[in-house]
Length: 165
Image (cartoon, rainbow, N blue to C red; front, side, top):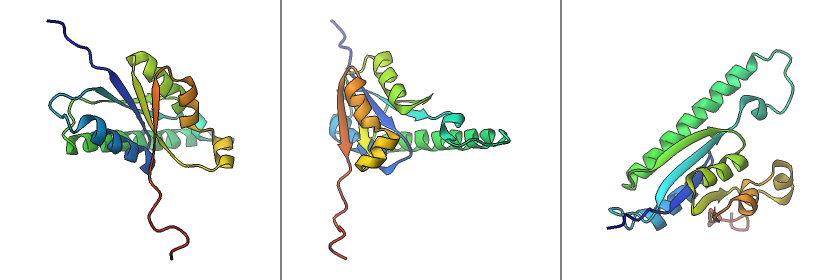
């Protein structure tokens, strides 16, 4: 009998609410309903910026970099623990959670290549045009550069909008 290799789904996470909404949305729709035999192999990837890239201004004494790096490590630990806890709460076992140092755009595209992923899932931060132009949208980048289907999950707007105070 031939063993079927399951397609790989990569989900990119950072410390944002939007990325965890995307992860939960994905777990609920693609992995939880068929928990005993999920249709995908799940790989959750957190890209940890380097301390120097996180600091976008020059500092006279470079000893501050070690503090920044420590913060980034703590964030990475929190993100991976939160992602793991979410999987456990949904009874999704066997997810691989990776932290890869680098820019999220490259890290996610590299993860797709490395794992031969069929699908990449990212959350949308909903930045306006100016902020997106300055920061560069990870979701825009990966939709153009990842060699697989890319799903951008948008968190629904809050019910109470500005017009109803």
